[in-house]
Length: 275
Image 1 (cartoon, rainbow, N blue to C red):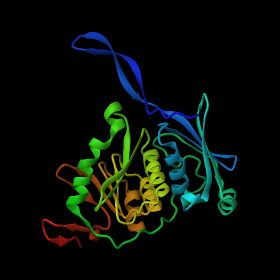
Image 2 (tube, rainbow, N blue to C red):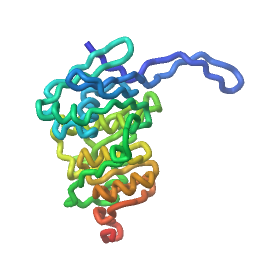
Image 3 (cartoon, helix red, strand yellow):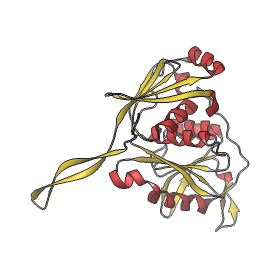
Image 4 (cartoon, rainbow, N blue to C red):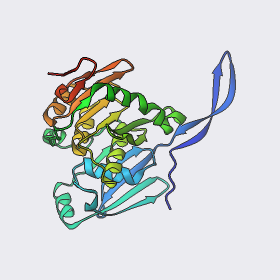
């Protein structure tokens, strides 16, 4: 039976003030996580072995292998000496399409495109997100401020990325953490689709930089707003523009920068909607 372990206590030698002291520290766990479909290996990711059911479902969704969680017929976690395998079986329709598009990839932390065979695969046209919900600019800023206290694993290890979903009516709901920023977002995606939570009226919150893959995953999730503490890349901005996503980045205590679709934001203090 698989047992989740997000961190371990490790012995260390601390040298401060001129003298060494033996101590210990909680360190984030990192393991090889293999994902397979219908008995066929697909990907191996280095990830934190926690919330792996969410990870399996979310990765499958953001990769475009399924569109709904119920298209995954079964999911099993198999622990070995080398890591953990997430074994998934797809329904008949998705099985057929999977083997048509099957490709082998190996993705280390911080890289979501290893194994891509063409430029078309690397930069697919993103799905369009709904454009009906308006958001108050101040609310998004407050949401990012509220995220840090909810990062339980990062508070222990200081080495985890977080991805969270915020909704104007309910605040921050699901929060997922991982040593890999892509993995954290995939885990969040899995949590949202597994529990059939509406995504078109909320925002994705990230504690990492915004690369194109993070925007692509947000589009697959169907969230209209993406907010991050770090800056985006040019391709991330271009992709967010095409997907209809409001990309907010460089979020700090006093504000943030809006790179795409500012018309979705209401700047209450000024009483105007951005043009």
